[in-house]
Length: 224
Length: 305
Ligand SMILES: NC(=O)c1ccc[n+]([C@@H]2O[C@H](COP(=O)([O-])OP(=O)(O)OC[C@H]3O[C@@H](n4cnc5c(N)ncnc54)[C@H](OP(=O)(O)O)[C@@H]3O)[C@@H](O)[C@H]2O)c1
Image (cartoon, rainbow over all chains, first blue to last red; front, side, top):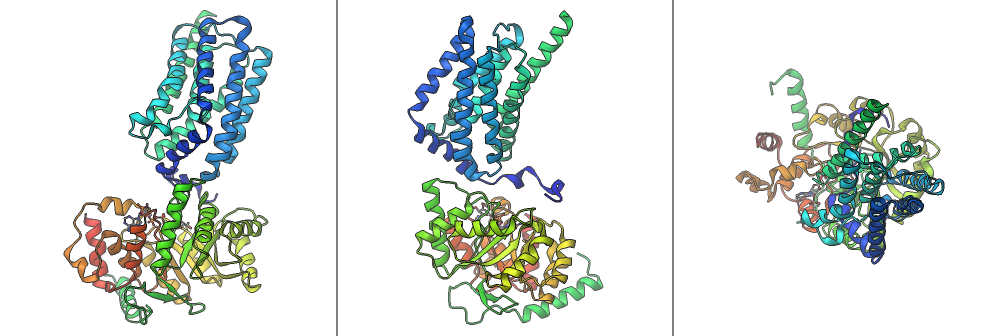
């Protein structure tokens, strides 16, 4: 676009907050009671990370892979893209993340033995994504029906994935990080432009995750 | 503002033009006034309807019906021009839904845009927009934000010659690229130009509006309320007593009357999600209009608040 520097974030906001939140309401209504299944999946994620039964860890990446592909297809492609044409270009990235997670799952490429600060921040972020994020709707005076739930909505799915990755170790970790990080940036920017305080959830997740990674890298350098 | 010779000449020209204000005299009581499109003398009601953000409601059935309700009230109040763009998300199919629901009102004056950097993608994009609206052809197609205008304008002139579109135009907003717009207005045989003009953003008064009059180009005014920032800022503030002299009962009406009373303006296209607002906006197009002194007063008053 010519003269792109004269454009502000607001110029790219194509919809009103009312339309945005109603979209979650409609999406939840259309998919209910699938939420029970994604809730069960979230519990399995937590149990798998906490108990770490060796041969089961690959299931964790598989659950995340399915969540990314499903959210990308059902929410981004079929719903969000109708009010935001730019999302049609983002939805395939969710499929890519799903495929990457699937590869990790098949290769059994992650280990969950990270402890210390990064681990605790990982748990905190994961707990927020699975249990805290759905509460933001009623806490901010919106209808419960517009709650964002892991495996159904993109933000809790991306945030939960960042939490899981903070708890993980593995050579493939760096390829799994960019897409959830970029989504959190994009979604935080969108919510911030709409003037929604909830943008802070995404900004705080990114800030905490970055601090945890920096901490881990410093510690690893110090040890080696 | 200090009166220089130039501003004095401009002001005198504006006053002279105001005396010849081509607002239709046979406008019926309560009906929006009309102005002629210079290139054909076809008359059009001076308040239209924008659809940026307000009509981008996706597949939401409740909100689609609300938009159709706004359109119904718009046509019922005598409105004609609806403006949209392929850039506005689902606004085009939402307009199409409303038109279908309202039995395709014959009053519609469809104002669309072509918005792509690729010359080849222009015609298929216009065809797709037409399918979304469900109309056989558009009344007006504008090059959105001057994007790839060198490629699209000749294509639009060709379409006009072939009878596939009635008018050709070009748009910008928020004061962007006025120099280039001016050059295009001077050199290209366009019927319409669209830019931002409101009670606080008055840059267009200096060159674009006089040039449009001189060249016989119809002017569509976008962002009459600065995308709602002005109406929100003035909410709850008391309307000056003298607003009643103009028959304005809200800030929105007063601000619209400021825009519409400029002799070079053909149509202003406020966007809204509300039936009461669309009615209010259309009724601003009827009744008395401010003269030059009153226009200054409105602008100064709003700026001071
Ligand atoms: N480059 C371009 O081609 C370009 C750029 C910008 C705009 N445009 C066109 O111009 C149209 C108008 O510009 P815009 O949409 O940016 O902004 P606008 O018309 O200046 O403002 C729209 C806002 O004003 C509020 N409003 C409308 N009528 C009101 C009333 N009577 N009382 C109180 N509030 C009222 C609406 O809120 P409610 O919903 O609550 O009424 C809406 O949020 C656009 O929709 C688009 O079609 C074109």
